Image 1: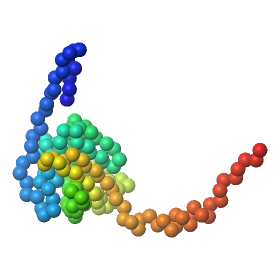
Image 2: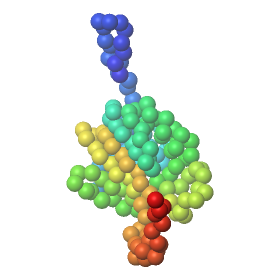
Image 3: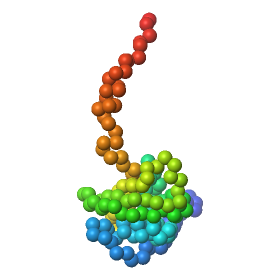
Image 4: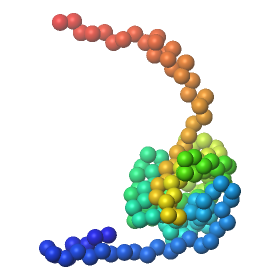
Length: 164
């Protein structure tokens, strides 16, 4: 963080975050990703934040959290407070990124959510830190019947145009 102390002086303030402890990474999963899952399941906010690089991005269900401060606030409210637990279903390496599909449970409001809640976590790791995490609630391909949607749209008459 840069601090302006006057017209000619600048200070760089650095904050130290606790590094996550050693974890055993399952096959196909990098150590930072395994550490993120372990910290989530342990409810350890400091270890979870230690998995991320300065300036990292988390996008959770179309909401962006940039930087360690915003990520900490998000994690404390959405993960730690709700006692979220992750159970890994599948890990896929995709062009250097890791896509982890996990079943989630916890003390969060489950109203309107599918049971069980299964989310896709798209991790980008650089220099042993998570630089980007996208969390998506994917739907199965057949959950949206495009043929029915096209038929319904085709049956609709276009709106009448006003006459001059």
